[in-house]
Image 1: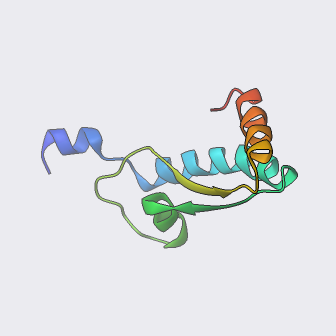
Image 2: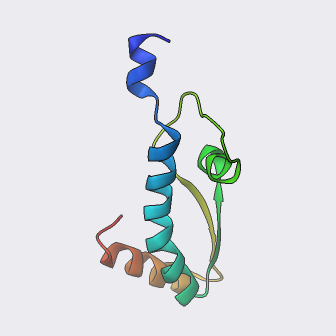
Length: 86
């Protein structure tokens, strides 16, 4: 592994830690707004497969959030922004 790839690699621990911090904020707000969501991509893989050692990774977390209307979207958006976590 080159120095460059080491600089851009993210450990499983930091990926899981970041994901859990985001989920702790997102989950209650999505539920109280009546929205279902799912975690996708490499982050979901890292959380679901025990012992997996990711290679190159990014710090982004991919979510899909189901909303039934623009009003519900605006409500969830306002609640998320009010936390100052996003």
